[in-house]
Amino acid sequence: MSARKTAKNSSTPKNPTSQKQIDANRRNALKSSGPKSPAGRAIASQNARKHHLLPFEDAPSVGRLIAEYYGRFIPTTPEERQLVDVLAYAERVRRYCSALEAHIQVGDIAEVVDSNNQTLAEALDSVSRRLALVPTHRQSADCAQSNALSQLEAMRKQAA
Image 1 (cartoon, rainbow, N blue to C red):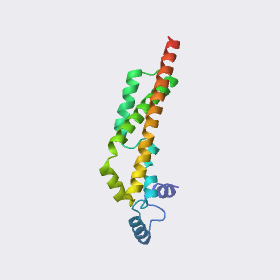
Image 2: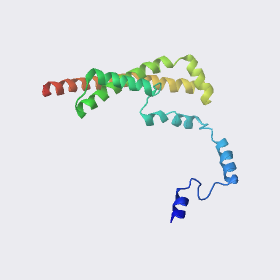
Image 3: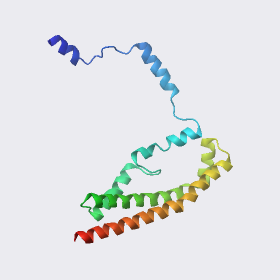
Image 4: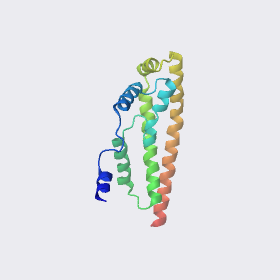
């Protein structure tokens, strides 16, 4: 019985990986260098959304912004926390819009042309489409923030 326990708890795997398999894994790893096509790169560029980050954002700055809103409004119920989250997200969207406007410059367009193998016309079209959406996103964020503030005030008046 103790022999079985020793074998079970052993750190050595039952079937160790052969040198042939290790070499094959290394060869295959050399082939993986990320997406090459513009479409593949566009998909990969959205990976930050898995972590609820917008482009140009980093997790520490988002954490600080959320902490700032929680410190300012001090939500006490789940409903208030949800409204404070909406307020913080609306601020993030407004900041994103401003960053997008500041980020897109002539030099950036040239960089897009070079890195994505796009023509100048394609790059300009892509940039102009993104910029055209900025006012809509900013207006939506302003509306969401206004609604959340109104609801939060109404909740607090009702609770008092």
